[in-house]
Image (cartoon, rainbow, N blue to C red; front, side, top):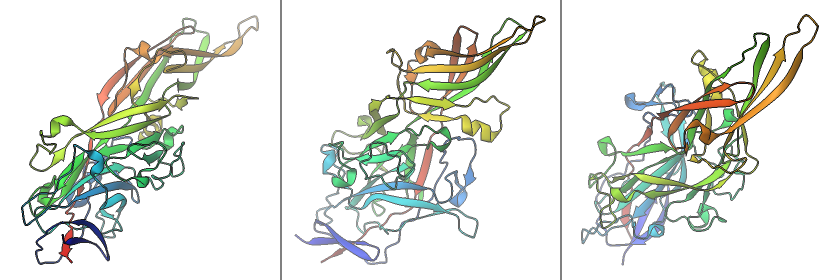
Amino acid sequence: MKKILVIFGLFAAIVSCSKTNVNEGEPERIGFDTYALRTKAGDSYIGGNGGSTTNIPVNSKFGVFAYFHPGDASTSTVGTWNNADVNSNYSNMLLNEPVTRVEPSTGTYAYTYSNSRYWPKNSTDRISFFAYYPYAENAFVVDENATSDGTGITLQDPEDDHYGYSHNPVGFPKFKFVVNPDASKQVDFMISDMCMNQNKVAGVTTGNDNEVQFTFHHMLSQIRVKTVDFVVENDDIEVELESVRFLGIPVSGIVTPSIRPADLSGSGQPTTPNGYAHMNYNWTGLNTSNSSFSTTVYDDTASDAEKQAAIMLMIPHTFSEDPGKDVIEVTFKVTRAENVFGEYYSYTGHLSASLKAGGLEGWERNKIYNYTISVSLNAIDFTAVVEDWPEASTDVNTIKVHLEQT
């Protein structure tokens, strides 16, 4: 067999054995762009390259994985993602590659990364891709709290939770996620769908102009408390809201991605001609110990900054009926004005209720929940209006891999 050399910019790595015909011509380096990538608030966009839109902040990053599948050009055998044995797919081309948004002096947005990658120069070698946002610098650190880089994200081995994904970079990693208790520092954790068996020469690419296009999906639920109304019969009693808290909800969990079976043929290959395949995202290993999350309240007259501060990004799950689990609590101060006899009082009250009392069975991924709370001095009542959280997509321009025989 002949060794195939994959040129990665200024360095090379031997990746497989195969018979390969090589075309002449200079390879082209990957370029990146984004389209309609919504983050936490999802209220506004910033223009991107080519008229696309994004609100990825300058200097923020997403992480990309690429799996090279060698084919055999002499027999027209196409290299493919092996869905029958997912862990036989090795992320040997890009392994959590950070892609950074920069803002050039021209005023247009661009994305940069360090390790150059190129399209195959034949139609049989293929590459599969997926990505996540935001990029976790310490993704391979086995960190129970996952707080060292601020994202709350670490990548675990697909078979053993005690190892980081870099220990055994095959198949899809598991994504361990820890919710930041400070809502102002929470991140919009997203994972993309799969772009399978991509090849520019063969015309199999998920984006326009032979680009690879990721579609990201929100992994979390967006929780907002819009109003808290107090119902008091006495005119001389004043009630002031002090806090709203969610207790006994998950503080951490693990997302395991997998390709949706309906998007694959009987042989395990994508059913779309461009190789696009939707993913399923399964949350497991939820931990609710010492869970307490405070949030602020806003109404429709609030400023954008106030609305942003009030958003909580939480782990989707089914509500539990166990004591202390999935509870909403309102703390308020009650003051009775001084009467003619000089009598008055002031005290702090606490009322709580199960989240199931609001008529929902749980929080779903990729949904927005707008809570309205009504409080009397001895009871709490609340409802939630549910709406879709718009998805986000990212264009990844032409990725070209140059192969040479040795």
